[in-house]
Length: 217
Figure 1 (cartoon, rainbow, N blue to C red):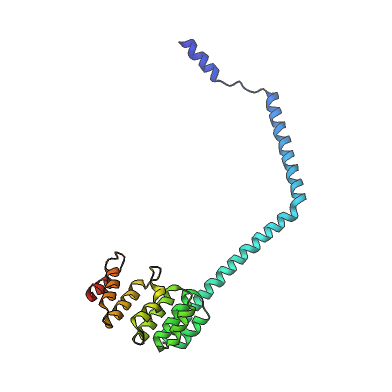
Figure 2: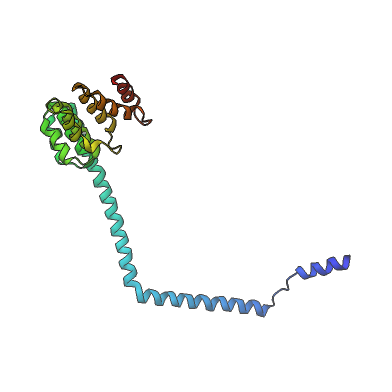
């Protein structure tokens, strides 16, 4: 048993290198480092212009991004300040001007708030045609329907709000409810009930709208 263990132990012992082998390894590493250094120098001499150009492009791009980010945040802060001041002063004209000089939901919100102050229907018409977002486009149209609905028949009102007959519109249920009420006012209970049933049986319908639909039915 002892002899077997000793043989296995001896097998795991790696033979030590001689001085000559260590010297060869050291020489090999030195030569390899020299070769690598020479290749690196040759590469740098050949492509240094491209390397410098790439570094400059990266630095310019990073500076541009930082400047652009700062300008973007500064403009957002400025717009928010103007918006806040116009609301505090209830200045419909300032809000309308802000809308014309802004983009996206900020512009739409400013125009709608301007309408709420001076009740100028032309601003709703502008939103209906030129709103940046569907939410405010449909909101403006819904307000116009409420204002002018008395001069429309139920069929005309349904046609006017036809592009809101989709759940992609945030005012799908409200517009259906408005149309159903118009049909009821004309005595067409069957048509109104048909629309109300759609709302009542829709599990996604807001509880307040569903409750109103059940009451009207």
